[in-house]
Length: 180
Image (spheres, rainbow, N blue to C red):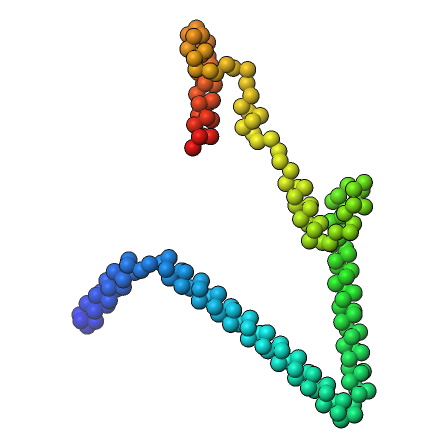
């Protein structure tokens, strides 16, 4: 019983020593590389599977034509075409409503210039126009009528120096932040 506990203590001590020498950055990069390679393999297999499915469908259709079942094949394809057209109509409607919402964000006078843009272009345009530059708060707050030139400041009387010392310190603090 005492031997079991001593081996457990030794094993836990060994694992902590090994953990301290592990290069996590290298392990992370290895894991990322492994993940990228597995993703590539998965995409390759998916494309091969799609090709095989297309080939098997073509073979099935050729077999149906050879057996003289052209009418069944035409009926199958027309029903599939109707379903796809219905789905396409739903997507077109959703796209048109999204485009209308985006165009509503543009003033009416300018809408005629942007109607021909696709949705991605409109989203990009609106995101750029929404990010208009504004005056930084430092510029507005930094304006004051206080003369804070150090040489002129030292020539002023003591009362003026005491009253405006905080303004001089703020100016030098701002200048030191800009140079860093």
